[in-house]
Image (cartoon, rainbow, N blue to C red; front, side, top):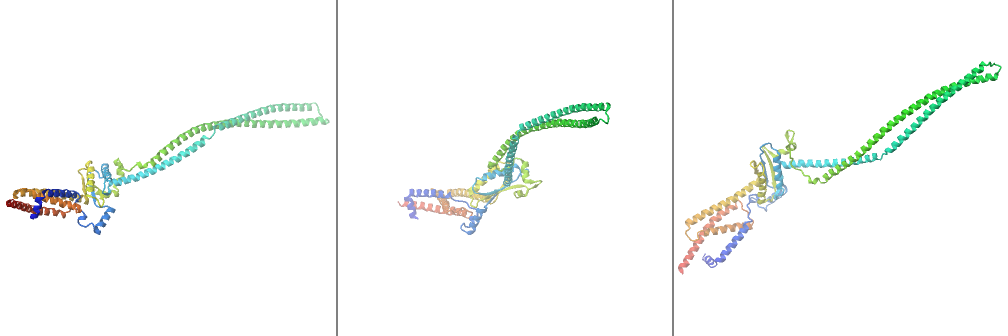
Length: 472
């Protein structure tokens, strides 16, 4: 002991520098000390059981955080779903989150399926409009190629021909009438001639005159028959003229109607071209929407009625949402963490959740629970307990030493104990020894034993110095 005291007395500066260096090194190591409350405090990390459990958590998720919200009105509202969605959005940017599930996830999944159907429907409509536009354009081109002037020329030619034919028939009728008149006059002359011959005393002996008389009689009969035939032919000619006139009138009306319809068809053709162009534009626009459909995303409906149609089927809630309802009073969300999540990551995750809830109407009506929240609460409680324990023990020791330890530098033993405590914590950091419920028991023992030995050492040091002064 005397050698140690002599060494300290001869090298005070070196001792102070060494102690300060030790304190700095220990403080650096102390920053790596972790507070552990999980499985690693009960099972060694090198065991198969711990490693298998760690692999399982890395594959399927580890600790969970359960968020329960108590709505004031109906269970599923736009505000509630939007709050869950905001939490999910913030969790996407955080490390340590394995997965999460909430009513907002289901709603977005449903709307995403509807979005896919919507995009497919738009694509089908766009393709259909493109096909219709092509067909309309083909029909318009076909109708536009029809030459109306040909119909007009044919109408004029047929009308002219029918007019000429009617004129010819009328002329023929007039000629037949004239011929009938002339033949009637001839027949009258022949009949008169026959009468004159008979009245002049033609006898049976005058065979020549008798033959002439008979021939005149036959000729008169033939002329009568011819006149009858001409009369019939005149009737036929009159009927033919009337029929041609009627046909000409009907064909004129028909061609006028046809030309009117063709004119309207030309207008319809123009409208088909415009409609085809517009449908083509609509098709291009719809197909462009489909091509850029990645800018669309599923989301939370803005209307309560739309949300109700997703959550409820008639009056009954869909079974997929029942997993998120607790006692028909709370709506929950589950967050699974990675197996290797750190304390700092847990704290950040919980802070993000609480920050979103603080900006919502559910600030006073939620509950955070789960093993991750419980472990974090235990760790924070351990830290607070350690702080209180150290502050209280230091205060009591200072008070006791001032009252009972009547020497100079009476607080120095306490400084020595603090240096030893810092060195111990720093060594735990370098050796990756976590602070657990068991290792926390070391600090009271260290303080108790350390203060005793420090007081004894300082007291003995003071006695030795006093003896040397008396000896001199």
